[in-house]
Image (cartoon, helix red, strand yellow):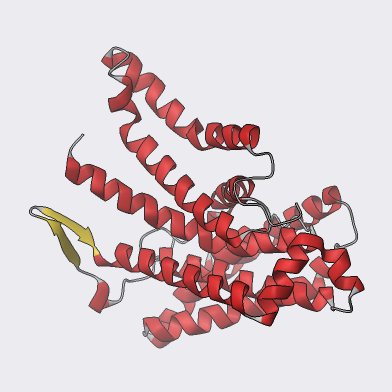
Length: 307
């Protein structure tokens, strides 16, 4: 295990963590404010990536494609909220799960119909396409650093909005006790629409940021949605701080576990057994971590007050 490899994998873990945070932030607030299980949140991440590819092909300008993709992701998210989700708020969780699963299948097939099943890619902006020297002999892609910095900037912005604005105050109150907030005269449905729209944009933004380094393909949001749910369970439902810290924790544990589990197991096992057990253990680490957190703190590390 070299220092340079450890540093690279820590940065990769932070990159995964901020992407998970961008997805989990809206998801945890929607669940916290409306007690609504939205399995279709991952399709917003996928749509953000596809829309960025489409608008880049039309404009040949990454910044313009980013703005248009976010605006379109917001519009599509609000359309889904108006057409489907608002009719499910008063239904039980099983109905919400089944309906949002149907949305996933519908959107995935729609993506295949519009863009085909073949993977697409989005070019990295030329000015950000190089690498930086972290230490002698060690280069790291600039775009991956941009993803980390953009995620941290969004986290800081969210902290300010949730902590110091009236809408943020209502969101925090709604995540703590939505029926009481509604009884005080606040239009909880409108509040949810604001939260849902903002969460849609964050998920779309995550999709745009990873499109230059991952394949843009149907179903790309399904696997990362599972990690996002693990994040909000560990961090605490309705908590932005919990989503942020939980996302970074999951990103680092998952990345470092997959990179170094075999090397660590060689201390206790023979090389052949380590190569067999290591990958299997690495894939389980985040779920073992979730089980440990739930055992110690059933409501998560930083649940919304009142939960």
